[in-house]
Length: 355
Image (cartoon, rainbow, N blue to C red):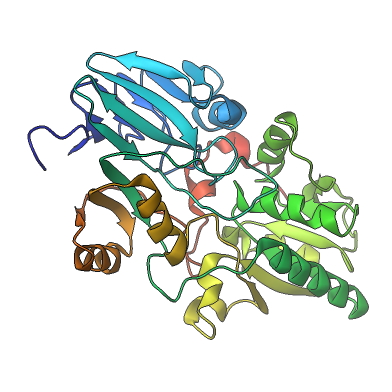
């Protein structure tokens, strides 16, 4: 790092010394600017939080309703000492934001958090802006990761669901509880208005999306149904952590699928536990990462997490100054994980008991 850097790494997380605030800190701090409500970015314990107005409901669910949170509209400016910040849509999940930091001397830095450029009916689109230094994720920063049009993937999921109906099975789709589940529910409105059943980790998050005006299929919790209810012909959404647990016994006979960017690697070990894989990610693919860096015009790029080495090497070949910025951010966890990271980080209130 350089002495004049606008963002540095401290034990508590990313820190702007000129503004005296942290961005997505992993320990409690006096002032925390939060990019979005995923558990590796929004953590409890800070004295005051700032985040995008669009994600306020999710932030309150994540951090607790008593946490002091000041909402900021996209583009609204806020002064912190020598710098002015503003939040800009990151297109990752509802209310996700990039942080633009402008110093009084004219330097501009951008912090992406997690982001994507693909169309998504469940959140606002990515908003590019120019900056001198760009801090980016690199979850899928390899040329193999290039996403299919979301509408096509939604059509694949719907066709699989209908095939399960014909075969006398439930269609159990594993997907992350915050972001992916709501995106699936929104995308499937193109094809049906049928009720989808969900794991008990999801209703509170789905409700926050509905309150923000996101149109999705109707839902009901599996745990609300009487014992002995058959789910044959139904679509059920569940976090990856539910796979292989006693909860699944209620859903048999069933076919299982997983919606994730990791499904791009066909035949890999991450797919072996599921009958079907659907390539749908809430992160930028390789082409989008490069396009975004071009859009920023940044001459210096710092990478927080993911396949950073490949991206850094590519940028250096293009004579862009690039290096790693070590953080605790996780990106999109893979299908082989034993527990959905969102559910692990979520307060117990998110996980009502289910039989």
